[in-house]
Image 1 (cartoon, rainbow, N blue to C red):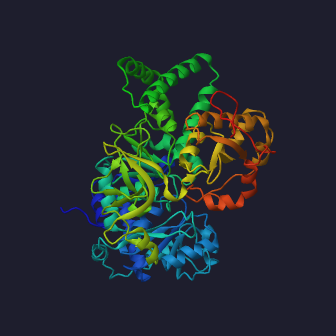
Image 2: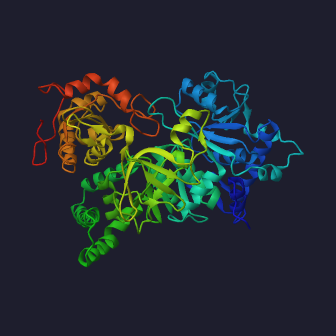
Image 3: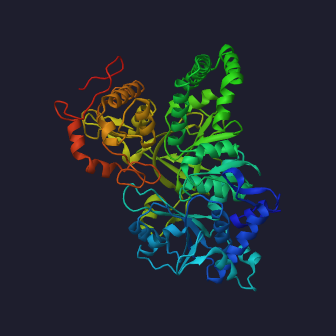
Amino acid sequence: MTEPNTTCAAFQRVAAIDPDAVAVRSIGGAQSLTWRAYAGQAREVAAGLAALGIGRGDTVALMMANRVEFYPLEVGIQHTGATSFSVYNTLAPEQLHYVFDNAGNRVVICEAQYVERIRSCGIPIEFIVCVDGNPPDTLGVPELKAMARADFDFDATWRAVRPDDVLTLCYTSGTTGNPKGVELTHANLLFDAHAMATVLPVEFGDRQISYLPTAHMADRFTALYLQEVFGTQITVVPDRAQLPAALLDARPTIWGAVPRVWEKFKAALEFAIANEPDETTRAGLDWAMGVAKRKADAQLRDEPIDAGLAAEWARADELVLSKLRAKLGLEQVKWAMSGAAPIPPQTLGFFFGLGIPICELWGMSEITCVGSVASPAQSRLGAVGKLLPGFESRIAEDGEFLVRSGSVMRGYRKEPQKTAEALDADGWLYTGDILTQDADGYLRVVDRKKELIINSAGKNMSPANIENAIKAATPLIGTIAAIGDNRPYTTALIVIDAESAGPYAAQHGLTDATPAALAADPVVIAEIARGVAAGNSALSRIEQVKRFTVLPTFWEPGGDEITLTMKLRRKPIAGKYAVEIERLYATEPVDAVHEPAAGADAPVVG
């Protein structure tokens, strides 16, 4: 049998491997679809959409939480030959207006709670299909399926889909203006999926969890598309608060997370160990984590792990560490990865010591998803692996990383000028990232080209490097924005982590867990000052944060300060907090301006 050249053909192949195996399930399995039922429902959805006139060249949007019903709806759209894409559920009407206008979708399939927002966006939508109700002038999914014509030829329809047809649109984060719609073809997706699987193998029946928004390419690729190509079993997580329970329920064999999720797991484990009431148990945990740290430190220094340490770690693993992995639900993971943003090396080291080597990857929507990664056995902490097979790279004179491969996007939707700026005539994609490559081919991410800080002395610095070092030192910090462009020294705006605020306040007897109260509390400031000093110890002197302020607010994804994919909007931040930034550079420190905790590693202003 020839290798499938569209996601439709790939899906049909895997659906026939074991039709009675569970393909998609809810936490606990109360709701599930076998491959047979999944394929049958996708066929019915395709027939209903075809009756509405949807086919090749059309576009259909989806707007819903992570749920079982999403999968046959999404795959059904693909089988008509139409382009399918998801929008973030948090988008305001004016944001939906821009995206729908750019995408040109005639249909939206959504949850009932979003119908009015869709209607108020100002873009005429021909058909709104609801998955969980039937508001006036909408279609329910059963009604859609019932519209199928008797003469609809399902097999001929999906077989007519071509590899160069646009499979999906992925709207970029929009850190500098409106998001761009990345057009990805069936061929793009299959190239990237197979290239990644040569490094991180995926097999039929591997278990994965879908918990990021389906508009996020990390979720579409690792959950939806890898399932279509390889036949993984997906457990859907409609609410991120259910993620710990989902991991324990599904026991994934392959799993990935954005850095913030790994950081929260690290903080939760450290908190649980520190607050273990039984002294004997706590002593055992402390011993095992001490061994794990020594192993991690050796790996971070790129030093071999001697036989004595290896033997002690094996004993710690048997007695303690394996049980900690099981408590996370990650004891059966073949590989775990981190992507979408840089992750602090200390976090990678922590999980390496715990026995969960994280494969850090580099990628972007414009190359479908993954561009470089290494297997757990070949990973090097702090590196994002090597380029996947079939990828070429070169580095421009200004340090920008260029790539070329079969997974590079077709272009930006209705944006020919921006497409030409990103893609040259020879197919080289200008990624906007600064990466370095060592003699062995391992890549390391420096930062986004446009985000590098050049201080008043002309020194180049990576704000992401500074921010990661400090965030890794204390779980209280949710977001940090390093400031220093054309300035004499580095400072920072710090925002308390919204999820850590309540537990921290309760643990320390603080009655008010609002961001304003915590930002003014001496105990909180002292902990953050300690974290800044600890983070500074991992930075060069010019990078070290000399002053900081804790803002009396939380930054929400999709707000003024951070995108829905958790990227900082640096220019809007600089404008919105101009007064606070100027205070950080006042001759004498003023109220709400703090310095790192005094100590051997704490720098002096100047």
